Amino acid sequence: MRTSLNVPEAMLEEFDRTWQAEGLDSRSRALREAIQEYVESHHRLEESRGTVAATVVFDYVHDEVIEDLHEIQHEFQDQIDTTCHVHHGEWCLETIFCDGEASEIRSLVYRLKDFDAVGRVSVMLLRSDSD
Image (cartoon, rainbow, N blue to C red; front, top):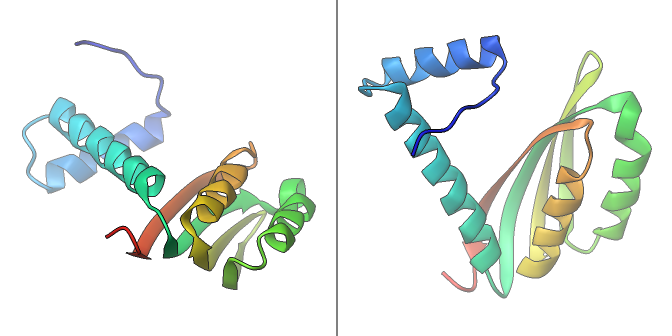
């Protein structure tokens, strides 16, 4: 199936450098692999049950969402063990170390993804009762 995408030029240039450096034979193959990794990551988060340990890493525009992010972190304080926060100009990078019910960690991740000022949310499940 053919499709078209709108991708910022700088991102596409970096993507092309990356797949070429890995020795892949085409941009199409690299995109298929990237899509597969995204789908697998989503399914792993969705299928997890019981208690999980995870890291959630995200970046955001500080002034636009900091108050909302603090509220969310207070809502999920039973699942959040600790956070690490770094400033990069108007952008911030945050890592949240979590331990708790998979359904609660999913809710936290989806709440973070709801903000336009949050650039990217990446989750790594470290341990799951369903593994």
